Image (cartoon, rainbow, N blue to C red; front, side):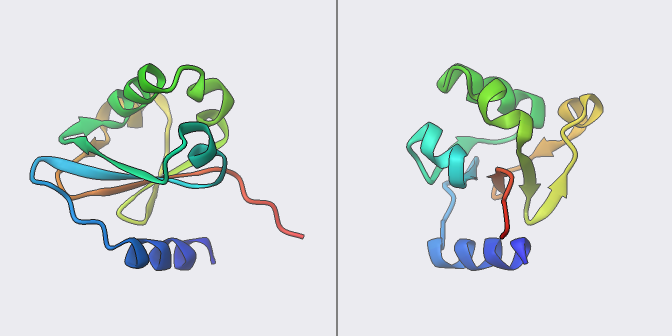
Length: 105
């Protein structure tokens, strides 16, 4: 269900990237913390570089938000383990989403 919601949000936003950039989407607590729903960042960038960029731009985000979040790149979930941080490359035109835990009830 989460992927379907994400697809809907992406189509609603209809984000167009500037050449040399990728789209970063913030959801729930990540959006609240950054006070943004999205932004464009320079590509290419590794997942580890993205984490560093976010911590520099939003001090404390790694500990308070990112440690419990999932990441998607072009709607595919990405592991945020040590190897992926170094090897996962975010390319021009990609759409990256930060998805905090979702509770259901």
